[in-house]
Each structure stands twice: as structure tokens, then as C-alpha cells.
Image 1 (cartoon, rainbow, N blue to C red):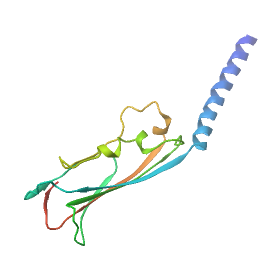
Image 2 (image 1 turned 180 degrees about the horizontal axis):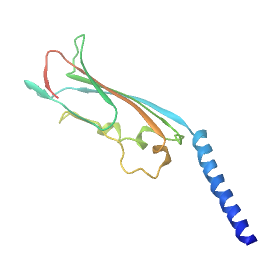
Image 3 (image 1 turned 90 degrees about the horizontal axis):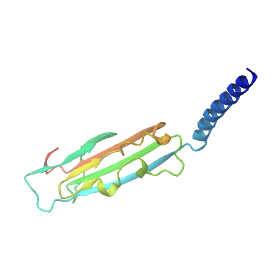
Image 4 (image 1 turned 45 degrees about the horizontal axis):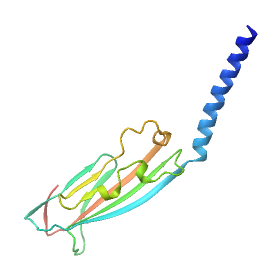
Length: 145
């Protein structure tokens, strides 16, 4: 019976110590990632109605019209902040697809998609997103969004 009690105490100490170490390490490596990206849309052959597609699975999109004349048909500004535990050494690529894949000028499609199937990474368990996509459109062009 004494060996059973010793084994139980050792197992409980390891479990509590491991859990406490996990939480403490998470707070020690807490941080945030701030990035901003800009894209412009210039059609190769302008149409009467410009078709723009936006696929964003997280964050908010704000559409607004320009207040001064611009050369581009659309300007897309992306502001992102990812905050949480276990963020040491992380970049936005750990949470999203690369920015060069976000905007396709030939199809006029914007895709801001998060990386799927990352349940095993604790930085994804304890995170918060602040993502704002601002699309500035020209007032003299008709759009189909």
C-alpha cells in the first residue's frame, strides 16, 4: 500500500508540475504580431462593371469610396494583429496563407484565409485576432462585389 501511495503522489506532482509549467511557459512567451499589407487593383481591360470578389474567413471588411482622385480602381489595406500565449518566434505565416497569395489581380479575387488543421499548436488555442480589411473604391466606377 505504501508503494501505491508514493506512486500516486509522484504522478500527481508530475501532473500538477507539468500543467503549471505549461501555463507559466505560455505567459513567458506571450506576445503579438502586427503586420500591414497594401494591394491595388488595376484591370488590364476595364469593364463597365468591375467584378471584385472578397473571401475573408476572419476579421472585418470595410468598403469605402475615395475622397480624392486615385489612379487605381481599388486599394486594399490589411491591418492585422494576432495576440496570445506561445507567440515567441511566430509570424503571420503561422496563422495565414502567404500574403502573395491573397490578391489575384487577373481574377480580381482577394483571399485572406487562415491556416487549417493547426489544433496541435498551443499558440492557436490562446489567441485573439484583430483584422481589418479596408477597401477603397473609386467613385467613377461601378462595382459588383
